[in-house]
Image (cartoon, rainbow, N blue to C red; front, side):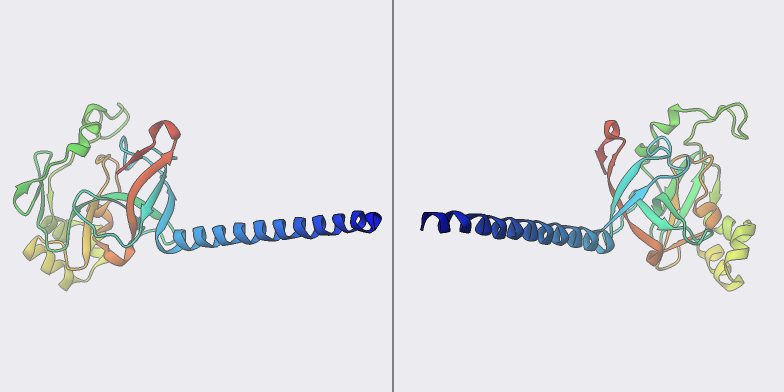
Length: 221
């Protein structure tokens, strides 16, 4: 009898071992499935490419954006590039639908009021190199423009929009309904709404909430 019990123990241990591994595999698969769904429908994991948001974000920074949030002026967003299918840009919202937007004497005015752009403070202390067309000017330098002027004079706008659309923007100086006016913090080099035009709400992937890489620049927004 003792020998029979001794022979049965390995079988029970083997069954227990299989159950443990099956449970571990099932749990791991469930975790990966939840993470996949979260990244598909709630979060977006993105990598910054290029200098357009310097020094707020540097080339190579990795960020997490939250999808389907209520967008506000000043939010940093990840968006589908309207001029480069399959690419994404990271920019800051300056004008909301219906806003008037004017840049004058290196200051932004939205709906007639000067915009608080404290997010440009760091960039105002960094100067462009001598080789730049904006040599020795700060990253934050913003040349004069209005939406009306862009609609009237910008060749990029004329290629992108119909004449009737541009006439309306020229007349009102307002961001069209369902669209946003975005800019990069590195104003002298950023390819943003001054060039690529207004950004449709459907093209905005999400609002940047967390920079997790590099670790020494870990921060929330």
